[in-house]
Length: 64
Image (cartoon, rainbow, N blue to C red; front, side, top):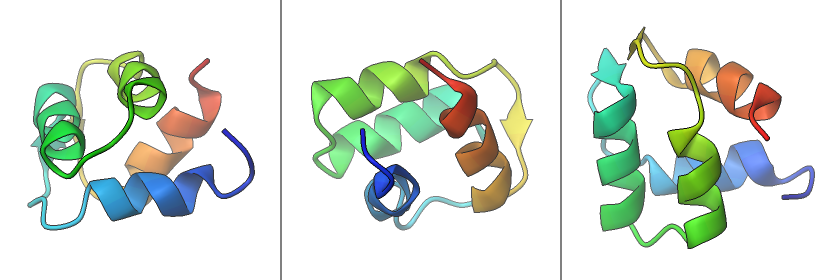
């Protein structure tokens, strides 16, 4: 993922209601057509409730 990763991530999370769990985020990304690499990286973020897109993007940036 290049520097556009946060923008791409938020595109695939479009329509999700926060707070959201990691599982909800992964399901939404898949249903919005995210590729396996993005879904895999999103799956590696910590299991918790995320209160908004900034919280998700911060953890996603740390994920490898």
